[in-house]
Every structure is written in C-alpha cells, then in structure tokens.
Image 1 (cartoon, helix red, strand yellow):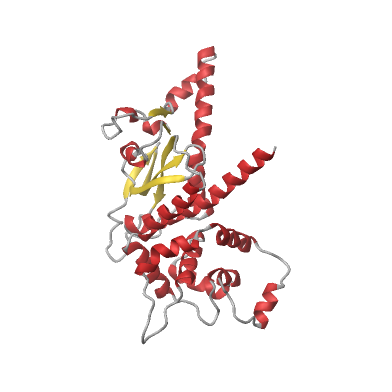
Image 2 (cartoon, rainbow, N blue to C red):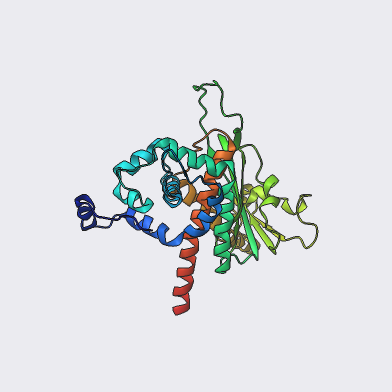
Length: 332
C-alpha cells in the first residue's frame, strides 16, 4: 500500500524518531497477517466508489484499515476520528494523510455498510478459509464455551428503558445484564470456527449444538454443558463423544477424599481443564487485549458484527503464534 507520495518535514522527523512503539509493532503485525485482498473482495461489491460529482470516496483499503484499527483499540466513531488526527502510526497504517481524515460520519457509514450486508460474517469465513488452507483447523474435536458481555443497566436514555435485546443472567450468586458470546474452537489450535451472540439469559447448553461444525469426534465443555449428549438437537448419526467437566460441588468433595480413585478423578479433571483453557484464551483476547468487555451498541446485531470481526482478527494472531510454536518444536 502506497502510504505517501512525498514526505513532509514532520513525516521525516517521525520516521527517524529512534524508537518503535508497541502500537507500531502491533499494527505492523496486523499489516502482515491479515489477508487484505480477501477482505476487500468481500466488501468491494457493496462499496460506493463515489464517481461523478460530489466528494471523492475514501479508498476502500483505507476505510477497511481504519475499521480494523477502530475495533482492535475499541474506539467509538468520534474517538477513531480523533485518534487519526492525533496518532501518526494509525494514519500510516491506514494510508491516510493528515490533510484528508475521514470524519466520524464516514467511519460510521462504513461500519453500517458492513452490518447491513452481513459482511463481517463473510470476512470471518474468508479469513478462516485462508487459515484452513494452512492446516490450522484440524477438526477432530471442538471446545465449546460462552461468556457474558455486560451492557449498560441505566435507563437514563431517550427511551427511558434498558436495551430490550439484553437480559439478566445469574452466574453463581451474582447477576449480570447483557449478552452472551458463544463460541466453538478447534481443540488443537484454539481457533474459533463457529460463534453466536444471544441475550444473556440463553443457557450455554441451548446453543452448544449450533457451535459444532459436524466433523468432530469429540466435544469438550465445562459443567454448564452437563447432559449435552442427551439434547435432541445433537447429531443422531455418528454423534461426537461429549467430554464434560464435573460440577464444582462434586469436584469439591473429591478434594476431601484421599482414595486412589479420587486422586485419579482429580487428575483427569485437571487434564480436562487444561485442554479447555484454549477457549478461555479467546475470551481473554476479546475482552482484555481488544477491550471489548462491554457491549458498545444497543441491540445484538451491531455487537455481534463487532465480535465476529474481532474473533477473525484473534484467529489470525493466534494462528500465527501456533505456527511459530510448531516450527520451534520441529527444530528441537
């Protein structure tokens, strides 16, 4: 991508500042890992080129890069406009000059374009296809899990109501209000192959069958998926083996038992928990690395679009890390 035609004095000073920041390293990593051409091919049929009279449209690649930067740093639309004015590394990543920054309405319209045509789901599938071609979806097993995403509980808004598509859910002895992010990940690589966003009161087990790709031989899940193998929506022909964790109360009793059988069961429970940990790494990326611990928008669709794109980006980063670990292991 040709970012600059001619360097200004400010550009030259920035280029020789003597330190590469963590933001620059991360953006450079995204620049090298994301399949930009495949993503643009999904969006291009729906993107107005702005021919004829009127303001010339921003290049598709610049707007796509701005959207990627917006979601990985969890900016609002006005916040992304301000960041492009303030942060030179973001402008370089997007290929945008200071004299021609897209305003917040342009950024919002691009986001609405992706949402209106379901393009984030298509981008998610396109990215997963490129990862699959590299052998990063082994498909022997799936780990299923779900995580609550909080939503504002305040009624100090125009409608004087909470978001009607969000619901309260009780986890342990604590109540949460918001949505629930359900995912199915590859048991070996930890990459998300299927996801769904529902209201917070939908039980984990009710969406489990929808998170399977149909080729797995086994399914791992925590205690919330007890009885999964008896669900009517599970495959009837060649059903996968369901390996589900025991309930916390039963596990607590085992810790007080010193018998050989109890020790063996505790060891098996620890081994299963370590295998399931891959799914928790995805939630860590979404909530901590990308900062999406709270729903930014009202309604499920807009939040689902953002979570879907973030899951695709997390897959690319985690896929690269898995390949590097595999390469190191092969050289030992």
